[in-house]
Length: 103
Image (cartoon, rainbow, N blue to C red; front, side, top):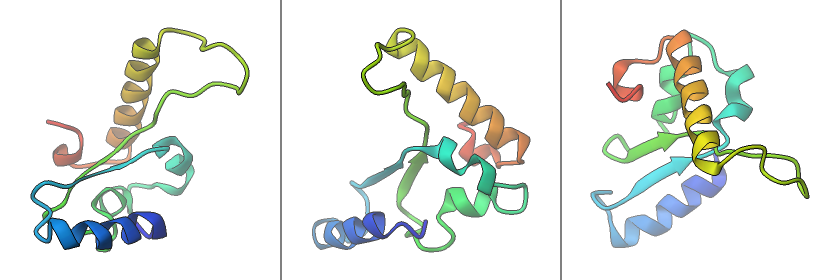
């Protein structure tokens, strides 16, 4: 993970949910990491490189986005589905385990 904001938030959450039974971490902007990911690190990245608690439920995704001030190029649900397919295809290409592909 290495994301200071995520780690800081998790420390605060641990006060109320020390076993992370009610906590879910969602990391967005997955597409910004596409160039950094490889078959050697995809599963480690999705797992959080050991920085995240093993029992923490975690997701990574790309949210639909478009240019500021411009109207959305399609319906939000369509854009969401398109980004989901793109993320899953990229992860599968790199060899993400079935655990991370929702299988």
